[in-house]
Length: 110
Image 1: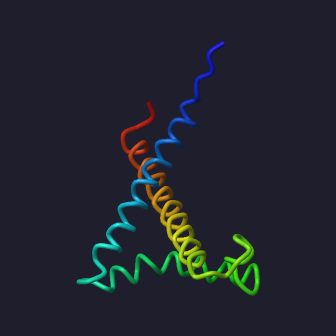
Image 2: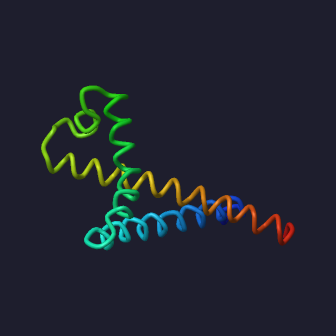
C-alpha cells in the first residue's frame, strides 16, 4: 500500500517551504542592508528581539536560560537567531497562505 500525501498536506508543505525561503531572504536583506540602510535592519531584527523579550517574560529571568541552561554570549546570539528565523518563517508562511487563498479564490476552485 503506497502512502501519498493529501492535496492539503502538499499545499501546506509548499506554503511552509515558501515561508522558509521568505525568512532566509528577509534575514539576508537585514544582513546586507546593515551598512547603508539601518532602518531596514532595525525592522528585520525587531521580530527576533520581540520574541526574545517575550521568552524572557514567559520564563524569567531569561528565556535563553530556560532553553539552553546557560547565559553565555554565544547562546544569547544563537537564541536571538532562532527567534529571528522562527518569527520570519511564521510571518512569511502566513503571508504565503493568505496569498495562496487569494489566488485560489480569484481563479476558482480546481
